Image: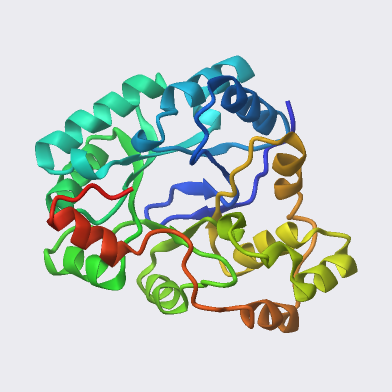
Amino acid sequence: MGEPLVESIELYNGVKIPKLGLGLFLMKNEAELVDAVKYAVEVGYRHFDTAKIYGNEEYLARGLKEAGINREEVFITSKVWNYDQGYEQTKVAFQESLDRLSTDYLDLYLIHWAAPKYVETWKAIVELYEEGKIKAIGVSNFQIHHLEELKNQGLMQPMINQIETHPEFPQNELHEYMKANGIIHEAWGPLGQGKSDLLNHPILLEIGQKYFKTPAQVIIRWHLERGEVVIPKSVHENRILENSDVFNFSLTAEEMEQINSLETGIRYGSDPDDQERLLETSIRPV
């Protein structure tokens, strides 16, 4: 079994989250996912990000079991889906996720989107945290106004907010807000989800040549330099290994600025406010 990727970020409650994890979004093939998880463990990954809606929590559990790693050595994240939100239903959904993951606790549990009942959902998650069933709690795809609403309700602040982030869409305003409020920024879709030509950009190619790194590795390093947790997804062994080989170089301030200049404002995933409107009108978003 490989040496763990030991670099981590400490959340405001003292829990440490590995800076790099394997995202499991869109991984539907059980055999493929199990093999990916086993290989990731072998090369040092200790952080795995899933969700109820991904339909693969059981596959992750199987992969970790077959990898032969102890539960306390891995950091597992899952999320409550939109139609399980609300105080009582969140607690039911949480237990169902625990059962599928073959564990009696989660390291991190997130609200997947700010659905209409997110305040009640958050109250349930805070209680589960206080009962010791979750090590750390947070949200996903929340905007500043959602985070402010939790604050206005006098509720515990999320420890992390997992949001779409990549050089073309750096979320600078939200990034600075979270930084000022002690909320860790976690990036999903960190490489642009393959929906643009970002990985062939001349600036990234040039920086990569200097460090003998690929554009993907340069982007992941950019996230890390910004103080973010990053969860690139892949089922391919060469990519899983490549994405982890990012802790042996650093970017200069000038290189960070060059990458910052790639911002286009283009979001490739769903817009949280659009999702919220769809949920409020009972149209099922994707």
